[in-house]
Image 1 (cartoon, rainbow, N blue to C red):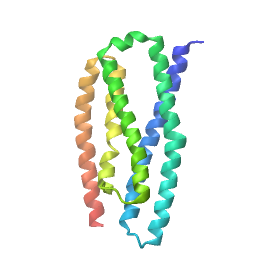
Image 2: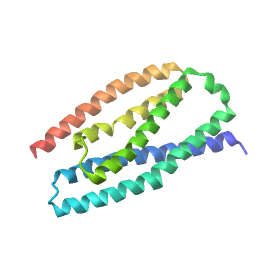
Image 3: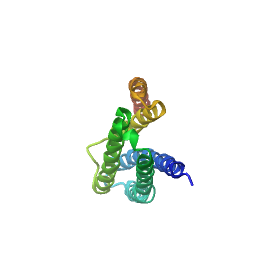
Image 4: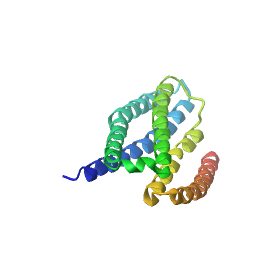
Length: 181
């Protein structure tokens, strides 16, 4: 059996699932925050807040956490087989981005706990912007892995700036449209 391909498959399955969970949970934060904005006397808002909390907690515990661990197991397995990558600058940057993504993942747990009790200092538009962070990290990681050198970094940085600007502009346009309605 070729263990490298086994770990690579685990890694791909893990990060696809992890990113799906990360993208979805922050959308739930947007809706949860909007349920808080309805006011404390709103019985529908209370029902929505409870339901969003259940959905977020289950998504985090049942999808995101196992997917993160699967990603790490697959990645560590591949690195143990091909340890020369640990000497490459692109891999150092990738591992730094993965660490940042793990911190982001854990920050989602803090948001779940905070939104359960009261509205946070982040409004729904702020959560929409918060939702773009993992997209930008994903772009950077994919560019680094595809090129396996720092050329990928430059292409990734240019893509980040362009796509980040587009995402920010789109979020602002969407916000204006929603405010008009």
